[in-house]
Structure formats: C-alpha cells, structure tokens
Amino acid sequence: MPTPAELEAKFWKSLKSDMTMMIGLDGSKVIPRPMTAQIENQNGPIWFFTATDTELVEGLKDGSGATATFTSKGHDLFATVQGKLFLDNNPVVIDRLWNRFVAAWFEGGKDDPRLALLRFDPQEAEIWLDGSSVTAGIKMLLGFDPKEEYKDKVAKVSL
Image (cartoon, rainbow, N blue to C red; front, side, top):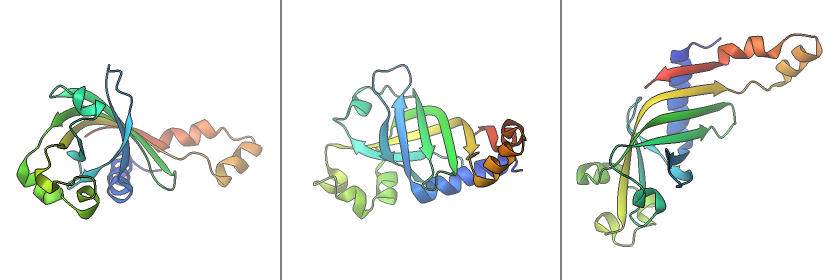
C-alpha cells in the first residue's frame, strides 16, 4: 500500500502531466472553474493564467481561501487541495511560464492589460487512489470488505 508521501508524489507527478484543476474561492458565489495549472516545484505554488475580467479574479481578495480539485486523466487519482490564492503579476514569473498556449488567449502578449497570473499556495490536500478495479470487484464478490483495503489508498497531507 502506498504511503502518504508516495500518494503526494503521485499527485504532483499527475498534476504536472495532466495540468487541469477546478478552482474556486471559498465562501464565495464564484463556482469552481477548470483552469490550466502550471507547477515548477513539488509543493507549489501552482500557477494559473486567466483574465482580469473573470469572476474568479473579480471575486479575489489577496490571500483568499481557495479550493482546487484534480482528477488525473486515467481517473486513477483524485485530490482536493486547499490553500490561498493571490493575484501575482510578477513579470519574471510571467516570462518564465509563458508559452504558446497562454499566448493564444492574449492578443497583447505578456503586456496584455487583461492578463492575470494567479498563484495558488497549497496548504493541505486529501488524495485518493481509485478504489474501483476488477480486483476490488472480485474481492467484493468473494465477501471481502473493500473499505478495509481502500483505507490505505487515501491520505491527508500538508503541502
């Protein structure tokens, strides 16, 4: 069974590969939105390019509590991540993270007045491995309790 540290490492590896999270502001009417996540280091921050006229940016107060959810493309890993969200238009970071996919959304390039770079500082996460498998189904048919095996596939981690 994987350790919490192994689950955390798998989360960061999956996020770096799959890059899509749903993120929303805690205690806000701004519902979570799918965003492309960029990470440079394990443990964050997680960066999101967006526009200044989005509900997410308009509802943001520096250091707002935020929750992001993640599902790997293979649906073998799920995570809920809580942390703080900041508007951080640091030109050095924008330059470092800029790519052709981001550029496609901003006609003015890196100097586009609508450009907003969000920094999500993750604080804690709950990470789950997929508990549904053919093996789990067979074990259930044979009378084994799937909850017993699954409890080792969940971890709460500080990030």
